[in-house]
Length: 202
Image (cartoon, rainbow, N blue to C red):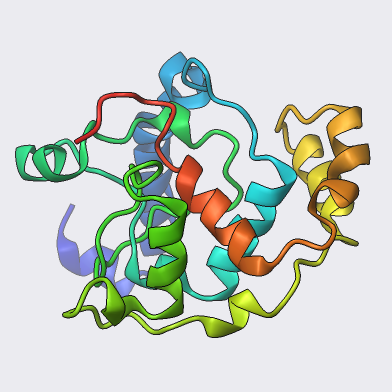
């Protein structure tokens, strides 16, 4: 078929585009639904606690995902620096995924336990006090504002509906668990659990 015929007939072009996209979807995406390693959690993966979930929401609100990825690619340079490459089973409970596409700051996929809570707090309060060349902004208000404990149960129920295995007891106790906590506590709790399920890290 000559290209001119397709280019001059918009209806034919639309049909061929739809067929091409459908074929690509069938070949590339549909098989992933049937592979266990893409939709089964890795061994030991637990849903985020109420405090960690609140920290994740703060992480998103403050735009941390814009400068930090949470995805180690299977390249030697990355695994030497960050540890084991990321696997799909680590993210099955994440809504939305926070893989990111730009690394202004380092990847955080395996940051959990790498630094102490005190280091994380100081870094978030004044990044240049621990990393002089850092261009990360400071977040002093996290030390003053308390977490929103009133909406946590509704958020956990929504995640439960989407397949995250929260128990009714966890949801019922969530508000009391985080009431009175500061936002910095929640964010540090979230950061400290990142990548701790897979033990091979540098």
